[in-house]
Amino acid sequence: MFASPRYAHQDLLQALVSECPVGVLVGASSAGEFARNIQGEGMACALALKSAELRFAAGIGRNLREDPAAAARGLTASFRGMTEQAPHRAALVLTDALAGHAQALLDELTLATVGQYQFFGGGAGDDAQFRRTVVFHGTEVLTDAAVTLEILSPKPLGIGVGHGWEPASPAFRVTKAEGLRLIGLNGLPAVEAFEAHAERLGQTLDRQAPVPFFLQNILGVDTGAGYRLRVPLAIDEAGAVLCAAEVPVGSRVRIMCSTAESTVVAAERATAAALAGLGGHRPKVALFFDCVATRLRLGDAFATELDAVRAQITGVPLVGCNTHGQIARAEGQFEGFHNCTAVVCVLPE
Image (cartoon, rainbow, N blue to C red; front, side):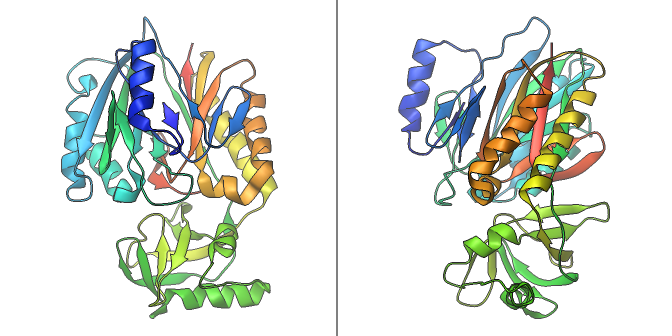
């Protein structure tokens, strides 16, 4: 279940369970929703899964801010694949985005599962208000927590990841950062690097209202094999840039650029990779996550991205939402927590 913050989530979950009894229920608040050929904001969407082959289990990890490792242990305590045989193991991961530590949570999950699981999902959203994000476990509505849906399968699941961003600035060294605050780049206030970039491009960066600039000029953390994206959100009085996820001290970063066309192509690549990951099996249903920043940046053109994904999975139901950060850790893709990135998971028939 993915539901806009405009809903009374507790009442919504209770109504769903009373009308449609379920064995396992997980979900999150969202920042834009889509199902089949419907896409918009302020909605709720749900996907029901029933299978004679797939096995499911729901997990919950609490106190994410204080101890991501303990939260990961709470999640994996429900994983039956840790003690039972299963050819293919995966989990949908949904986390309270505003609790932070999503990358640390994914790292701890990978360690706890000895790299035997694929992970996909995202950070709960709240229509880009960044005030309160929640996850669902049964009829519980939780903050400072993460939930998982373990999927054990005799057939492979396909997971694809893609973004259409490229470097547009010189490299900077992160010299100071605290939590979500990016404080220093090359020893100077972080905001000055963005202001210099705006001047080079002939764009306007308003410190009091920087989001229009930031949506077009995000950060890429150099991983050596590509860029992990981070979305700047605001500028505080000290000149620190507040980001949607942590940017590690000592990392090399660049300001990135993108186009609507490259974003659509990236989503197509992610879908193709997910389909290829099925190993020749037919797709049954697809889950799709992309960033609320992508939806805001593209506007009406976000529908074009969704159409491009649907075109590759014709006849296969598609359900998903815009998230505050995306999760993907699969074969050949180890970065974990992303921003402005398309994540596609296809379940086999």
